[in-house]
Length: 246
Image (cartoon, rainbow, N blue to C red):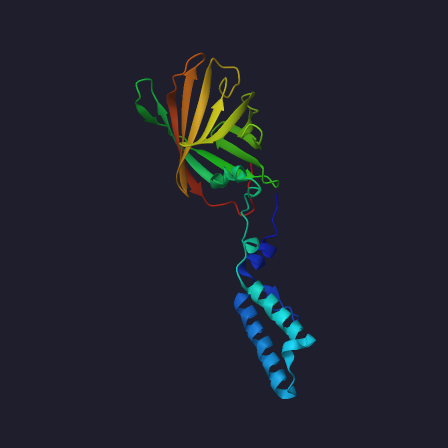
């Protein structure tokens, strides 16, 4: 996925180019508007022509209005993220917009008695929307571990359907995610191996624009009791200037 950064920069800053190849921004467009109106008034005074009903008046006013509109901020001129953007035709497509970017995750394991045990290793996560704005992917990397999952929104079921892949461990499974009151909740039947005697559930709780927590739970097959096994705290990292790399 690539983006014309120079083009985006000019659009985001409201810049254009004149006949001499010089760039000008919104302030420049306002100056150009003032110049056009000044010329209009001067012409009117010198020639004594009633411009209010003439074709020239209509043309001048049209140009002035166009310049004014160009000088105003526009949603279309906003710089998109290198990590994609959700399709705006359905609000649910934006459920994972908060997660776009690069993240570092620290992990805490929970013993059977509830004791928290911080883990030494951390993980790096890359998350991004594909160009359709409806497909979202994450890549998870830790020492001797790499996995990815890719998900798309199922409009009929009103949830996200995902596939988890870990080639090294030969694990793949299907996931279902849904936005709940507590956050984004994902159910993994049979665990990430897909055939375990337990299920996994994760719940993402956002804490700020630059951090969120992913709580991981497990329940034995045939039971309804969820027991927390991990807590992962994500901290935002600088974006990769060339975009996401899995």
